[in-house]
Amino acid sequence: MFTQSEENYLKAIFHLQQEAEKGVSTSKLSALLETKASSITEMVKKLAEKNLVNYQKYYGVELTDTGRKQALIIIRKHRLWECFLVEQLDFKWDEVHEVAEQLEHIKSEKLIDAIDRLLGHPKTDPHGDPIPDKDGNFTKKNTSLLSECRVGSIGIIVGVKDSSPSFLQYLDKQCIALGTKFNLRHKEPFDNALEITVNDQVIKVSHKMASNLYVDIGYTS
Amino acid sequence: MFTQSEENYLKAIFHLQQEAEKGVSTSKLSALLETKASSITEMVKKLAEKNLVNYQKYYGVELTDTGRKQALIIIRKHRLWECFLVEQLDFKWDEVHEVAEQLEHIKSEKLIDAIDRLLGHPKTDPHGDPIPDKDGNFTKKNTSLLSECRVGSIGIIVGVKDSSPSFLQYLDKQCIALGTKFNLRHKEPFDNALEITVNDQVIKVSHKMASNLYVDIGYTS
DNA sequence: TATAATGTTTAGGTTTGCCTAAATATTTTG
DNA sequence: CAAAATATTTAGGCAAACCTAAACATTATA
Ligand SMILES: [Mn+2]
Ligand SMILES: [Mn+2]
Ligand SMILES: [Mn+2]
Ligand SMILES: [Mn+2]
Image 1 (tube, rainbow over the protein chains, first blue to last red):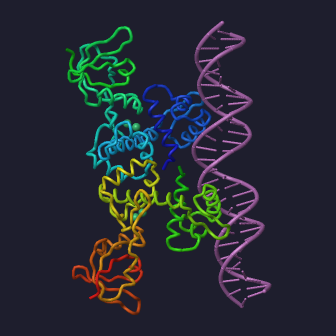
Image 2 (cartoon, chains in turn red, yellow, cyan, blue):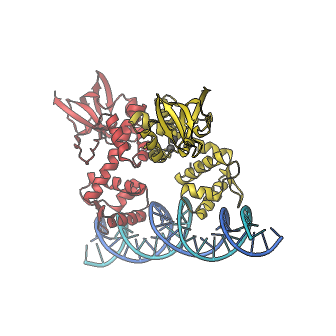
Image 3 (spheres, chains in turn orange, cyan, red, brown):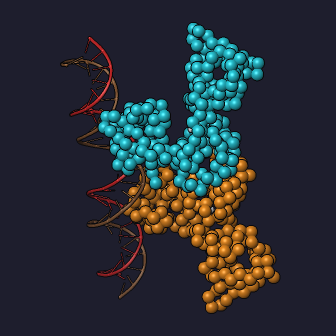
């Protein structure tokens, strides 16, 4: 069994590993976990001791197979709890993360399996992120960003890269949600702002916003 | 906000206060929390510092109004989670306590209110214990024990005093559950063992067992 | 490629919540 | 009511998970 702190480190290392192919640096972890670099070094040594990560002084860490498996168990719990909160308790998608950060540490396999069953074994969480199965398998989601689409594309919003409450609330205000079908009409050369239509309504999407929206592209008109 | 440890102390003090009218002793807390007496003394001083308990060296502690209110919030959460596990996730009544011990520490008023609403504001938990409302009010349950009933009584099982898994499993095996209607037929003078009938079936109930079952007595035949 | 800038680790502390052993207070009992 | 038994507190330590400041390694730059 692992401490809450250890679990948070494993999760953080997993997430950072997804982006950078190299070892995850102390400073990246420090920033993500909002913990001083020196504390990161200490904990990382402890995780290496327990064979959850490979650690090379000054060159960062990587999860071992055991570490990766454990990280995925926590991520599975986090995302299932987020689904539960939205689907059973009517939480909004911007309200779930903080509570899920707590719930993900509850130790009971029976509990999380029951939640999974209650929800009908969902494949993605309220932010479009994939939910690993009990063995840690999950289908990596499409990684096209709206910002990278060509003008004329038709597609569906399937996920958010930034899932901070402020961004999610902004999406709500703009009537953009997961599953929203859009038509990319125009890209402004000056600032890369986009214009999309949703149900024949024109919505302006800044470049920053568009680069935080994952999409499935259908066909190009 | 309080630490998990502090919350466990408040809950323990509350429970022990229910039985003994005097101040709760260090040794009682030590036994219940499975923590050495010296550690209890330390923590109790900290709680006194925070005005959650009144503490008199050598004479035990009592909850202040603030402390009592806080204890009831935790107990409310514990019992609501137990209901949730049984009613929504098909846990058995002997499987819920351990998980609820973890879930009761999740910090989110919105969450527990939503669980309460989902369950339809239940008044008692799976062991027959009352669930305090948001303000800490609850109706103290009937405290008649089966062991104290007169032969000839008719009644209903409404709660368990001991809610250890082993006792609950034993009750399952004997087909005794909350809501079970019984007829107290005989009391054996030698060992105070009882014979009750449930649906015309005779069940032998030892004195120890009977002294852990709360009942509502209807009328005496 | 030497030096400066940046990133990482080490050394030494702090707080929380626990422990054992010893000291002290209370309670029981002869 | 004094001695013995029991309960409680105090003193001194430990591990986990943080911190700051200083030392040291790596990387960037002139
Ligand atoms: Mn989340
Ligand atoms: Mn999510
Ligand atoms: Mn319980
Ligand atoms: Mn209960």
